[in-house]
Image 1: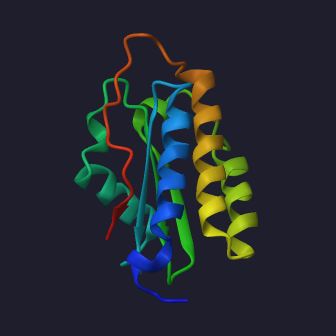
Image 2: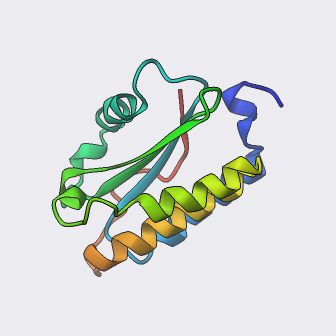
Length: 146
């Protein structure tokens, strides 16, 4: 397997993940993004937080954006939710989502792991941030890469 970020997902797989984001966001006012990079400098959670700001994900109206951050070579990933989410959910909120993703990642099925993580995030967010008619897609669904 190539270690280049661009080769991590095929264009078709990438479209499948983007479609999962679109579908997940149909049920919630929350915003979900995926960021993939080769390696993580330092702490993955801190890196996810930096990216969250860099990608302007902290500008959503309800502070309810989620970043799924993946560092390929380090085999690490973080689900980072904004303040609006963390203020209302229990501490273990993302654990089941992480577990599902890990099952797929361990098998080397990264596309399906990301899709399941995105869809599960959407389901989780729906409870606290249901979709309303006034919602707009505040953030792009494209996968960003480092």
